[in-house]
Length: 346
Image (tube, rainbow, N blue to C red; front, side, top):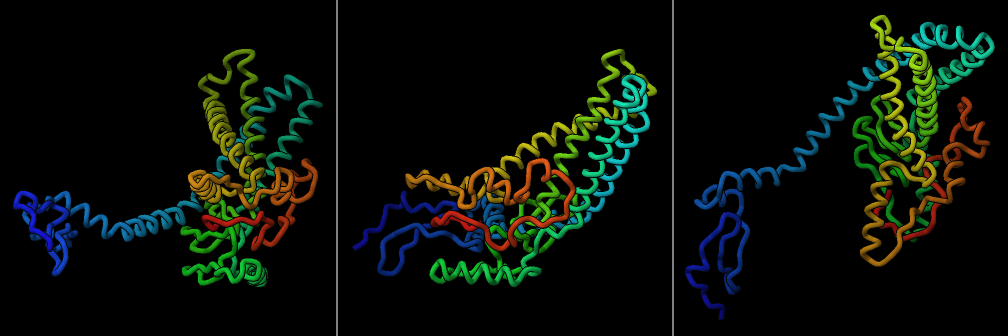
């Protein structure tokens, strides 16, 4: 019933060999690793590809564990380095730059106002930085009552939808919660793990992280602008005796450029009610929706103002920037959302 193919068509290749199953037609069959090892047509490169494919998940897991362990040890080092750089820049500005280029040039009144503003910025930098370090970002195990209540409401509204559960933490996993391989814990509304604060940025410390970026950019702008004053009258900044001041100028301008991009990015995320992780998931959902001829909408966005209030609360714009230990609105377990058929749960 099934004619045997000519000999020219039965030459085995390195990946497939032609075999005839009992009672079936001739079709190519994938060779196993042992068969390839014994076959003459298999090349060393093919062996390497199959070995990599069979061990790909193990390799990725090993690399992830090594990188996470490296970040655990790197975090405290970066925290010490960040505080050292902040102290260096503050000292150079207060005792080297400001007395010469502000107090002597513009008088005591202007100098007092600038000093007061600089101390206010410095206090907010340190306050928000250490608040971001010391505040727990939000672990589901610490808020089990809210997590269980949110899971029960989600099941009742979704007709018995299956709960998300983290097999590593062994706790329920609310919406917008992700597992951090560095902290080895699930984090509520996780944005990313930041080694500069040796902590995850999540629901409870995201506001501190944003304000730290804002005040650090403001401080870098003040210092860089002060360093530019000598350039209007001469090249004092570039003399050999001012090598430390030149270092401070280069450091602050470099940090300001990076912070500007980072601050712009997170402002966009706040106004659109996304985290960094959700942004990439939403891009994937939007691509699949376009293929299906549909329009994707972020389920958590409620408008720019409402999105802003979910992070900073219902305060004025100026009040939001003042130091405060108030918790963000909500419990981190559930969020106002538009109903939709989710393609990827985030």
